[in-house]
Length: 102
Image 1 (cartoon, rainbow, N blue to C red):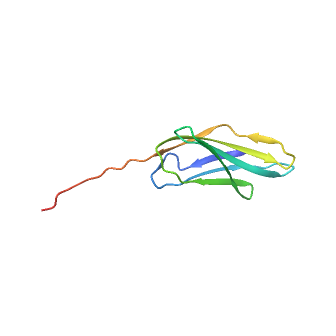
Image 2 (image 1 turned 90 degrees about the vertical axis):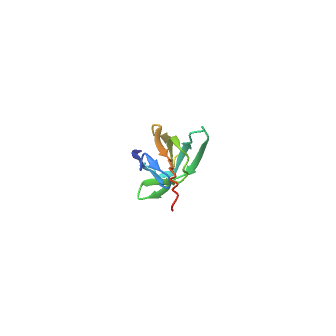
Image 3 (image 1 turned 120 degrees about the vertical axis):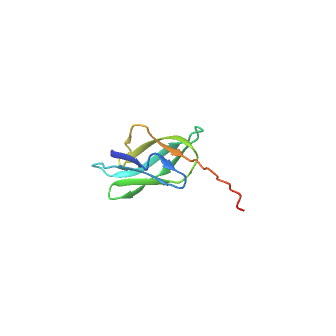
């Protein structure tokens, strides 16, 4: 597993974050899973999409904070491997300006 990336980082409101990694195996890759832990410590898993050995997932929740993620790969011989835990940040800041027009 190489080239683990997340972009953009940090992200603002309305910006989706694409998490990707290049995953190859001599016996063949069976499944690549992404585990994301949100700022409230809630974790969930999703299956990543494969396009020419680059597996990706687009994250589109816009809650402020730092998210941790880890990618797991399973080959066709049922061997498991994982990447280091990574993180990305989402910053949502809205400012309202109210004016009285005469």
